[in-house]
Image (tube, rainbow over all chains, first blue to last red; front, side, top):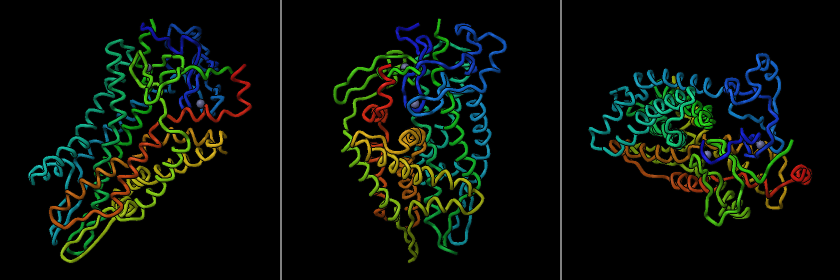
Length: 232
Length: 209
Ligand SMILES: [Zn+2]
Ligand SMILES: [Zn+2]
């Protein structure tokens, strides 16, 4: 246990939306992990789960529902992460863009786009797109997976580093939207009938879904779960 | 319910601290997980509102003016932010046009108008009608605002196209760059203290209770 006192120990809960610290009048079993928490008194009573379901408390200042931890945090975060992982396959296999130049048409996947930039000598741009559309999503899958597993096991390993990793994922995650925006701008510009045309293809939809799913997954995860193994 | 406005709980690890006044430019960090708890605001409400108005003007410019002009074998074309989002709406990937338009146009628009609304009243120490909902929305909208990603996307598009046609930046690209800076200044900051400077009379009793 570190020096700082946790809200749970003080019997307070802070509002997710406005940050106000309120007295904790929530029933003990409202969060799933509290139900397995031997340190929370009353959490092992078998009939508590049913009583808690209909009961919720709103923040007296902003009206948002109060939670000790985000509800169903890990289950929701896993589901969204897996959805993102599944979408990542068609996002890479299917073409994201169709280019026609003087009657010659071709379809490009994300990796083909990166390779094309690299071959034409635009190493910087190739790198930027590679980082935003391959490195960031893959790192996100890995980091979030590790965070979810370690939090589920209430691991006390490298908690400070894991907390930093989570904040890093939140900070860089949305940059993956880059490829979608590039396709949007390019497709809006190049519309010369017969001469040259660029159109979006289905792959970009899947790629956008990967970004949205992983962002939602990171948001569903409650970073305070990282520290919940530290209550002893 | 008892509330403790003098306390702050770390959003990242649930540690509770007492709020202490900060000097200009300082920030309070969590001892346990190193996350930022809160920062001293360098902006008073008047300046904040002025920047929000500036952001609103720049937002209109970014949306009205084309961001890029291109020409190819004597043919010309241009694109605005709207046109870019709309270009995705044609073809098989159409649904992605919705989140794209949200992240580069609708969310920034909502951030600017909600902030403007809230700040107009906060100048007089009052809470605007719908203050609670506006504040909750501002917190929820923040991660979905992607003007900076959009700007990088435009730059990549310029480089991509300059290989086989002539590309020139439009006024919209400068407006987008300015919008990015102004949005960072007005929306990526601690808005919690607006709750404190606009405390309504009824909850003053609760604080003392
Ligand atoms: Zn609240
Ligand atoms: Zn902390």
